[in-house]
Length: 259
Image (cartoon, rainbow, N blue to C red; front, top):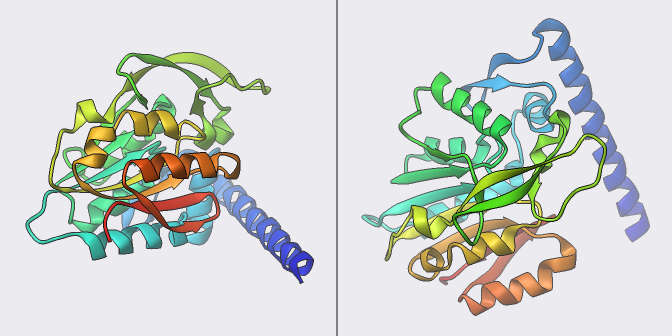
């Protein structure tokens, strides 16, 4: 039964990939790239080199199940009159930040993205929707110190997996130095509510180390991409900070520090 289920899941994954790529090919023929279209109730700049863009065009959503878990938990957790912030760390071009803004429950939204290509597309999306003063965009890598870090730039077609940390030795990847920021240096809120998505391709330990004050001084609900080989150790790290894991979907794990 498990083998059969795995087969069905692999076929489903293959089918979704074919639909995504065929959709990208179709839009490339009729629109070219980049182009401005509509999804999520917004005008968006689409780059057909991007997997995220093609997925959003094909399926009208991106990581919808993950978003449903995070944002429904956030709605259930927010308290009237409480200052609330949203952190999109590893924002890419800001899908989560834009969805958070549309909910109108956050007093501040920060999008942190180290790949300047993604950050530029994020700025374009904010401009297209008159939201330039609604989301604070920080073009840097979230880390445990506000200095610089070594950053691996993925090829343009795969820039959703660009990452800080150990050098990636693959064709088409480029190594460069980018600014780094501690989230604790960007926001000193205490006694509020923090909702966040962290997707940094294995660099999450450094991100958490740079935001311990914010995490321990506020109620928090977080979606963090954590790969299986580091999950046990990372869960212990979060437990030591007062968090418990309340859900997971694929590599996305959900933590909060309140009941």
